[in-house]
Image (cartoon, rainbow over all chains, first blue to last red; front, side, top):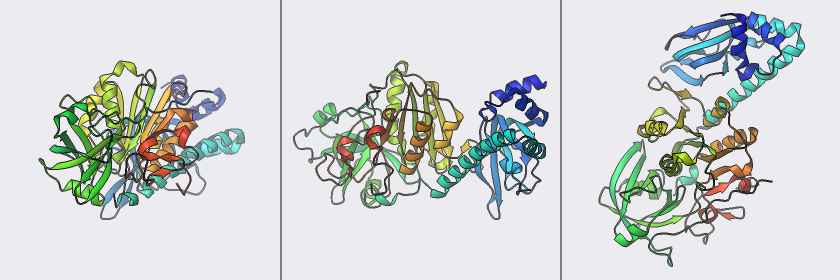
Length: 161
Length: 293
């Protein structure tokens, strides 16, 4: 795919919104497109963190292997959602969950190491990227909290209804 | 400033207008199992006059009475314009009364008082886009509203149903989603816990707001479900600049009398049974996130 087409694609993704043309071109320079078939693993738990991904089309499941339970699907990422965010953090160096396509999907991957370099070289870009990543982390944390709360369990107040 | 779109006032259309504490009697004519511990009971009033007079609006509830056990407030989950004139209640069998209801069989009778409470403002919101955000047993009180939309589809703009449940087995009415989709309603279901049988979304209802764009000038949000979910749905709607008087919430409280006399369901200045259960969030904003309430 030509860079121009990829830029047009990225512009449609809220995560890249309001990035200047120059920054978008830098993103395209470190981006790869990947197509994954339903059931195909994009990466596995324990793999080296190499790419930050955005779903262009389809649905990607994040799964953690639990002994005696198998793979537990903890979240899914829909069109335009970001996953693999920890690849851009300085501490985490291996995947803490696996990613598998639930249906045929297309994702764009940003080379995590190069993205970190771009952020180090240009702190304005770095701030924009990290600010967006903070939103991703916050929303992922909220989902996890709500799942932990087990909202649909029997409410105490109804026990004597 | 936009005027608050207040819900319809409560109306009582069953038999005992002057004695609302006296139940009418209805026979269970069918039971539809919906999920583990949840079923829909289809009721037919035994008095033909009551059957003829009875009419409810989407979002209202009845007090269902099991003699010797007690009453429980249950929202109607069926089509208000059901030609068979059956009234459906989707019940989760978790308390003393609802467990007793769960033990009833086809042919048994129940006492019914109602309909009580305010309704989803279906007339007021005509011409608007609707986002129906609900979770778990919060879908049944909204199903009559969806039936109303299907019957009167041309009166509404874009309609989106966001529905969440604990697991795929807990999703209610899955057999109806296709019919709703055919009526040009976007139906999106999500579950807290995925499994190999579920190829849909795993996550929570409030996060769906990140996956579509709504027009805050023209969108009405109707929400019902666990209060924690409602709270975050409201946060997401407000973050997208939907005005507080265009977010409607159905609350569940300990309703007893159904007419604002006993005070069991009081929330701030409101009796949820009479002033609710459907409120515009603008009326609740002071109370809904306060621990004491």
